Length: 605
Image (tube, rainbow, N blue to C red; front, side):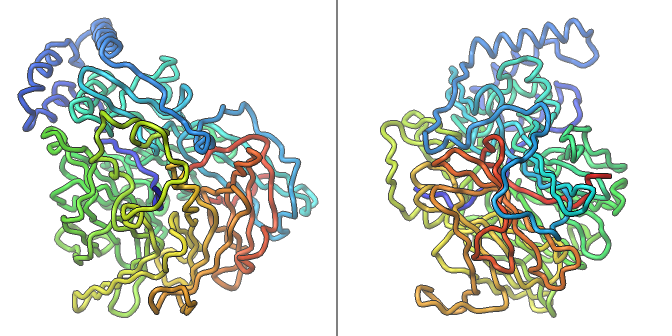
């Protein structure tokens, strides 16, 4: 099977404060089946109110810990040889100086930090559990977040580059808790048998006030001179860009009680940051606007959704916020009835909303589109009467693909459910793989007539994901885009998405190559890596003073699986198919991860 669309995603349906635990229990009693009510009544008898003494609270936690230890057995998930670079690495104690660079870092490359995050699970890797309730397991996008950073600093002569590498875990509240306990503590609560997920859900809430861990740090962004790492559905963590030290939660002066999703967007022109958050309980989605100085939440609105849509990304234009509401959902009521917590339902509706920057639910203009799954938006902009939305689109979701599998005949392998027995390393492609194939796609939404025009921009030689553009063109019309491209056979044999190259998209040029199955696809250039080399965290670095949109470089972490060597490549986007201008060998292995970003900042100051 080939997996062609990945996502930086983590489910967190908890609140960030710690209200009465009886209230937390009551939230999940709605339509609770009779088979769980006796267990719930026993939990309610526990002395866990916040107004009891510290000693009683500690005794209650110990009692619950003993209950978990007696009922749940943790085990390590199997890791195949072809999945070895998804395994975690040790944290460094200090930055390491780079001594091996093939080629040269360009003289006009900006000083700054290239940083990427991704899962780096504690205690050896992802876990699964077995209990009287059934089995649960971490999914492949989970794991405590780790930052990997490469610092580019010019020497005092202005000509010589000093490059260093460092890594560090993001020290969230639950990371510190598990480090203190020195053992796996949070029960996996996303995938598995529904009774086991419910039990994990409630026990995690009773013990920690959270449904699950602060996991899967997936993105890094800058706002008003400060830097943040963000996990899906969590409050962003401010970080020191140089030491990678976690400084704490982003403190916004305003009423925002829910976590962010992983892709806040800076509004063109104003510099404001548009954010959104989803929850498994109403309100299902809220949108907010943070002031350009990063201090104040100046606008917040409930979009009044009737379902919890697992929306991972959003878009902005000069006047609008662009919201995607596609049929990949979290549904606790469905779980209580014995169904999956997360499910993609192609029979449900899909729509894109266009709302004024400071609009409310009634001001959103909704456009019905063909059902699909889109995790990442490449860009949005206004053109005449139309709002144009471009992203990476597939017909089904890679997140919920295992929801119909027989758990008794399956096992977790590096966070993915697979049938027990010998694993075919020469797996053939199937109709399911075609549905997961992610292509560059365009929707044109006519604000005057309400009409929608949608089409594939690219063909099928390569699946595309993790799109990026020159960040100076976010929210305005752009000519070029870039994506990572999926290596089909490597992804099929490992059961994990691997990206064997990069693509440059020419939105204003047409490609008429013979292998295209239909006319009208855009021109695409490919930069393919050698051998068994795969990338993650690619980012566009604009050239200072560049005159054209594609004046700059793509920088990306790569790993050569034949030599077990990790590097960073710098590729000139004007000469996209040529060899990288610099190949920087890193002093240690860097696991595959998610999103990367380049933060231009003078380091020697």
